[in-house]
Amino acid sequence: MFLKPYFQEKMWGGTRLKSEFGYQIPSDHTGECWAISAHPHGCAVVENGAFAGMKLDQVWQEHREVFGDAQGKVFPLLTKILDAHKDLSVQVHPDDAYAAKHEHELGKTECWYIIAADPDAKLIYGHTAKTRQELAEMIKQQQWDKLLRYVPVKAGDFFYVPSGTIHALGAGIMALETQQSSDTTYRVYDFDRVDPSTHQKRQLHLQQSIAVTNVPHVDPQLQQKKYRVGDAQVTQFAATDFFAVYRWDLTAGGTANFVRKTAPYTLVSVLNGSGQLQVADKKYPLKKGQHLILPFAVKSWQLSGQLEIIASEPGKKA
Image (tube, rainbow, N blue to C red):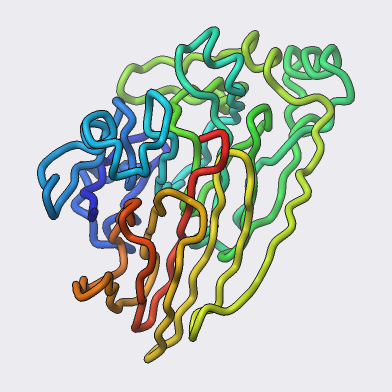
């Protein structure tokens, strides 16, 4: 199931989604490509096959067999590409329990694969407060340089961002984000910027932010794995309760035969190159910027060509 993305304009967005991927973006401040999405704030549309023209959320609700009869009210994952032309706000997301009670949707654990980064690009990841009281006081006093942890970033880096993690992408970064399908964001700090569309500072959510932030911050320990599938180098970045995320690198002229072992479906995003996907006797050309779902009925597939792909699968909590 190939998908047509939905695009979100943001005050921090730019034009790299057009220049890098060839997308037809709505403006020169487009920040987000919601590539594989069934979220009501931006739903992808199926481009081919029996469900062509249907939104992904409708396929999820009416044809659950496509996803291995998976449970859950909503399609659990959301794949985005983000163009941070300017700094994003400093923010934090709630876990499932808090989000269900206060926002009536899923929590938001996410991760980033860095597609590109300017030489001096940095992101914010975590904080220095030892107690919730200290966190609240440092926020109140706006001691941002003392509170926030800045991390230099380069293309190919991977960051796991569990719910409760204070974070922000910095200017000059493009990232593919795999996340729970949630649009709940609590802003901690927004650099005192004025939104040009409203001429107002954007709303902050300090009470909620202090309530949901993990204190103290602890960097998650991920066990990355590397292995080969045919001519493809596979990197497993993360395998969590919410999702597993992989990079598939296929060198020019190579082929790789994949077999799905446990997950009911697989999300696929082509970040670079071109090639071919073969499922049984059907062949599909692949190119940079395409996004698709390999549904439950697809147990094995072959890739050929020169491709860089980020793939993900739902975890046991999805």
